[in-house]
Image 1 (tube, rainbow, N blue to C red):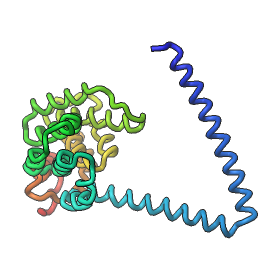
Image 2 (cartoon, rainbow, N blue to C red; image 1 turned 120 degrees about the vertical axis):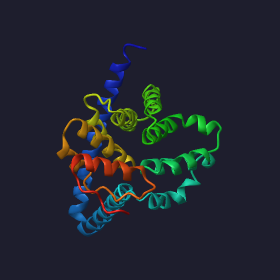
Image 3 (tube, one colour; image 1 turned 180 degrees about the vertical axis):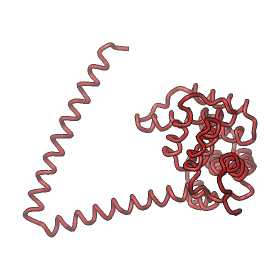
Image 4 (cartoon, rainbow, N blue to C red; image 1 turned 90 degrees about the vertical axis):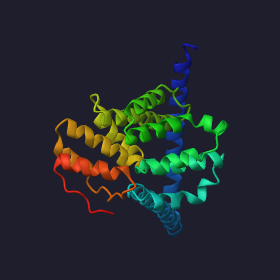
Length: 262
């Protein structure tokens, strides 16, 4: 590696920052001048921009609420139009379906969906996805040794070659899978609970999986008040979901009321 690479990158970043600042200032000046001379048009433009931003914010909030609802059928219905348009649908559509089922504790349905996925180049390329899924499912099935093995393999994968924000998200989910397996094996290490809580916010799809793992650690640590906070507003899980049994056991251990049966 060239020892001057980091210096060149730093100079490039500073140049880009200066150009962005200058461009932003110029655009702001133009916008102010336009607003002064054409206030009606500028008001209309701003209204359209604000309406678009509000619509996107509301759509994201609605999706997040759906993913946290625990209603796997509604999630799959929402995904249905795109599942067969994604690349390699014979492999990836069943894997995505399995992900939804696993995220809400439907272990048998998740295993069946994985079994239906076509093996081939896309299957091999989806190694990270499969290791994450296997970690969740083995944990929920009680096969904790296999879960810890899969989580270890997941963490040892090379860093993804993507932009920094997305890379940080992927790495967080990788290490959180290990924390989840350790939580149910009652072998957690310091920082695991905070990691699980952070991961639950990173991906609303796995919000409840990470929250239940964090609740197990909270019980092990004697933080029973925190258990109630972690599971506040939990869905009333159906019998098909492993989370139903998890929730009842955790509620009993923490002295919390059980939810009404679905």
